Picture 1 (cartoon, rainbow, N blue to C red):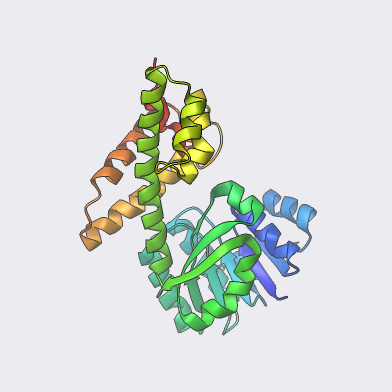
Picture 2: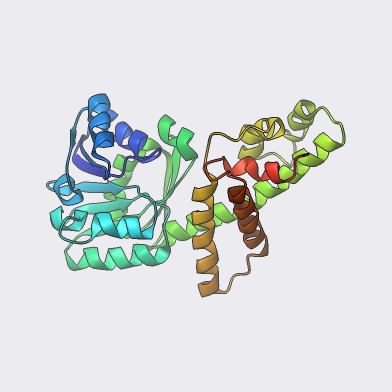
Length: 289
């Protein structure tokens, strides 16, 4: 068991940090809203620090899970950032879904200070975080990864080194590209079946045992048919992720026509007030008035 810090206590970070504490690690947390940090300590023990650097002081490993590239820079760099408080030889493991560019930027800044960096975005959503069953896609040096993997295991069901720094974020982009296209296809299928007058519970049961089966079908098809979207992975978050994918595609030359279309469909969902609706709310654009 080691001393760790966790920066960012949102819907993902709060339970992830809790699993680290439950595994027996000495956890110090930081959150921009201090009340959230106090709430976490009340539930899980450990301590809350006023700045990222204070949280990171003395920690062998520092985890971060924040909103975007700029949020990540704000908690890692600068006089009060995590790097300022970390000791030589310690590791920063970033669970934010961010760009590969910022991962490489922070890895270089950390290396100059004798620190290791692993980009380690996660998949599995809030339920996966709460159940300690996230899939973690990592980029970094093998030695640092082997040190970090047993600790990451506290909130994961699968932890894989995908390649050098940035490879974790690139893998998460592949994940989001696949999910976006799948959700639109699922929305169209559920809408088609409903308009055809089929018993959609039976449809989902039958096709869910065939080639159309997916996690999204198993967990979202029924609620899509009911028009229930007030839960899950928010549209705002998905648009942030798809923006990262589309920006990276401009760099590597990949064509993402479906991803670009789905991104614009999510913009329409936002225009209807669905910023915090689950990503399955693509169905709402197809439903009967």
